[in-house]
Length: 103
Image (cartoon, rainbow, N blue to C red):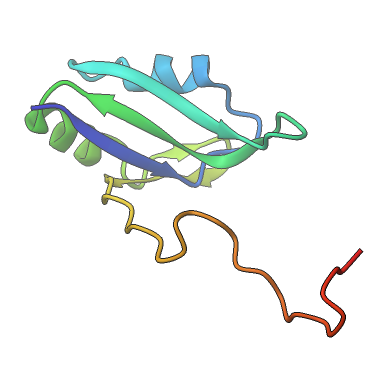
């Protein structure tokens, strides 16, 4: 069964390709992705790796958690499932002004 890893502490200059090269040192990498800001395209300093098996994921955690990359220390851990949002995924609004339309 495949396993997703969270990778934190990435240097902001790290590309998806560079992260892939690093994680390819471990067998069983299916995909990697550096998360970027949707407006600027800049790295947000974290990413994810999809590993083929839980054993491959455990090996990657052992090898790369605490690894120094570009002057920063990586935090690599098994990704936790995200909790469902109580508001259906929408951002909650601020206080309502009297008069209804805020525009």
